[in-house]
Image (tube, rainbow, N blue to C red; front, side):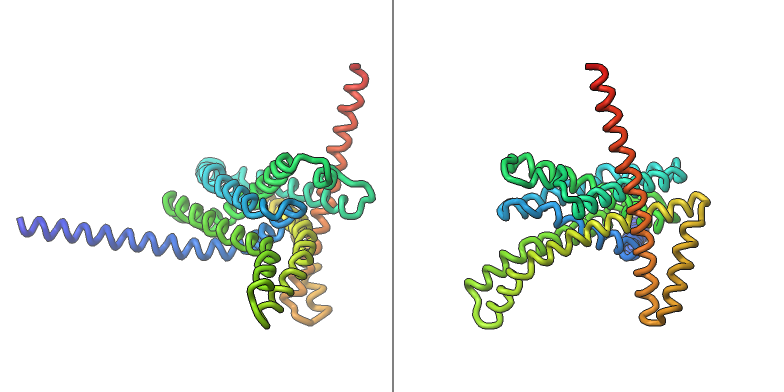
Length: 319
């Protein structure tokens, strides 16, 4: 009896060690995957604040909360099982789907870029004007943010899956879930701090003293500027990430020309300047990827507008 109990305890200890080892493995792979997805995380952080610009300050945190919940839903309910299923049954289809998502990011970025330089106000700008129902405007902003987040989240989850492809299915699922939750909390926590920084500054001005008040005044004055900068950075991020997804996707599909061109161009610029070579190479790569994003986005925007014109003409002929 005692021998049986000891054997049972040994089995329990072995299972506990195995579980601890598995948890350590999940934690290590989660950390590695999070680092790999850092570039997309930065883009997500830059893009999201633009969706609360022009709305009531009292609705900023609730809106960010709704977008964060939508982001978690994207990652855990939709993308996680989709990634696992595709990774197991049809890994070849993941990259073409990501490229479609990249084209969508290029489309959104090109539309926003056109709105910045166009003398005519587009749909989004008109919607933010007076006379529009605030609840309807909020719904539009939240829906747009969650759509964009879906593409960025898909890129994050795909990068994560690529990093744990050699692991077993439970480990893949655990790492994907952990990365999804950690990145969502990190991104939307930072976004909440950014958009409420002016309110924090106002509180410091009213209740602080000396250096604290000076910091508060700096936050109040600086936050609108930061939000304006983030609006530009967010647009650039859409184009950059979209272009990079398409370039890497083409390379995965056997079309290496665009990727090699970008790599060689970055090397030439880095060697010519000989100043901060790693940063110069990264900037050159990002600019070229962004330019491709603009080109792809412009093509998509043009095609959609031609389609709308064609449909309008068809409707007119029918009437």
